[in-house]
Length: 118
Image (spheres, rainbow, N blue to C red):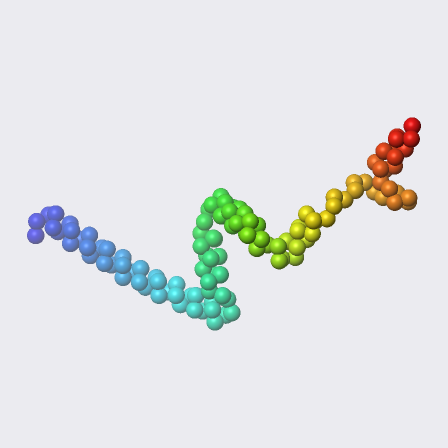
């Protein structure tokens, strides 16, 4: 065989060998997911966690920020306890600042009221 054809044959054999190894790895990974499923884990979420675990920290933070923005825009977080509390906080009037006094007024309210009388 001429040299270029011999090299081609070597490349093909190496690729085939790696593809066979890849099939074995795929089967091994599939078996691990089955084992996890039998142990009570939800494999779809497990796959997501594996995908996130493999990301670098900056990519993962950016992904979470975008997902949170989308969820907020769609109101998907409003039905969670923290989301409900946030929605209630937005709807209620602003709280007074300062510690209430015995007469029920904050120090700043008392000062404003008494300054108006002077």
